[in-house]
Amino acid sequence: RANCHPAALRCRPRSTLYTGASRAEPLGHAGTDSPDRSEDHAQVAAPFARSGAEGLCRAIMLYLPAIVVGRFARFAIRRVRPGGGSALPGLILSKIAPKLLAKTLRSFSSGVVVVSGSAGKSTTTKMVVALARAHGLEVFTNPSTANIRQGFYSSIIEKSNIFARVKADIAILEIDESHADSISREVSPRIVTLLNVLEDQLDRFIDPALVRDSLQNVAVRATQKVLMNADD
Image: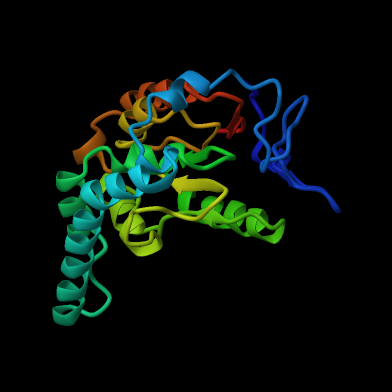
């Protein structure tokens, strides 16, 4: 793990996006010093890991109905409330296909980048996404209003094809600090960016120490780098 100041996350001309740490690796490349994740990928029950007619049939049976139901729910909600539909369709999809989120996040060749903390998540995530896209990476990300589990499922509904396949190289996700621990247990992030921890929403988090403990669990699951707000 690297204990770095956020300013160390930098962009180099004529290269890919780099993380600020010793022996930095391009964000669009997993690097040779990363732990072997082949065993993790081997456990993915993903029809798209198969080829030919068998994979297509499994995709149709497993995910096409779930995506259709999710998209219908989003369409119906937005007919009633324009701009809505960022949570309920994802909640429905998560009940129909509970393993779809992990399958999707494991499918990206350059892994998953997690951004979490009490404040600054949306701004940081948008900047990192903009940098990655400027360097030619296809990015799967989530809106700032959808940073909990059902929000990620809603993003899959929006970004995937009807077989629940998302075309992207990397996932860069803003994750609510109360959900980051459970999601990182399902899919180990490649890079974890931790921002400040404040006395915020005490009705949810009770004590900032609990948030710190939870985010520490996320950090230790990073397979390559940890970027921390060292000044806070």
